[in-house]
Image (cartoon, rainbow, N blue to C red; front, side, top):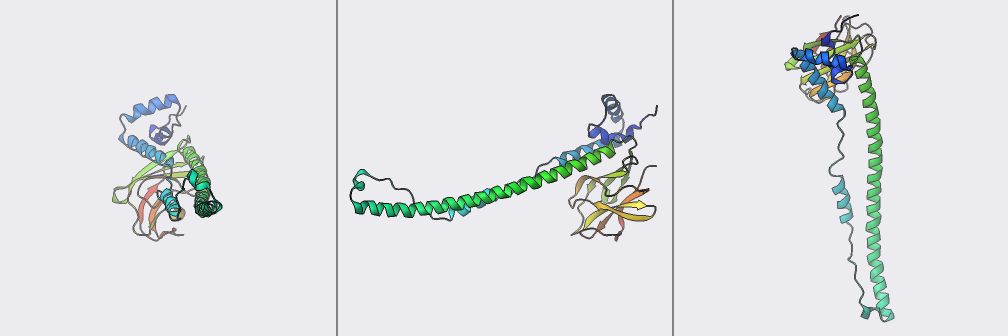
Length: 254
């Protein structure tokens, strides 16, 4: 029976993918292994970010109220008993009521139109959010499959400016997951681009988000015999081949 190297279990532990007996053994291992504790912290931070909801625009409510407030509205007048006598009084009040009602109707229509627009926006936002959540779940499932694979292997390396990168590869899944921590935002309109190192030939493997901080991403494409990966700073949208010196290079674990 083969013994699993505990140093390869940090990601699976963070994603609650270990059976109870392996959890106990790994937590014992964590007591004396600083690098594994660091990896678990990074994976937990990234998992928390995957579930963070997006807030609606804060100015939406005020914008609707401002549009309604622009419509002139007349206050309602209560009729006194002495005013209900005579056709002229009735006609005058009817005209005043009609004018006031017209303005109130216009305000109501504007409010309905505004709220209808809000409802349409909310429906579109909800649909977009569901699609994004579905895509995020699918990618999270793929990430988890790589990290929890029995043959998953981890390799960490220091990147430029004090950042740290960790790449997990699985031959059975034929995929790689890259985690980075402490990475500064790219300069200007540049982006970070990942690459597979196919024995000296760099193959594009996707972009990191433009923000700084901790990130975990499923690299685009399959391993295809790649021996390592690289990270570079590229123009917005990425490049077909690396154009700048690498931020870091990581060799895959054998």
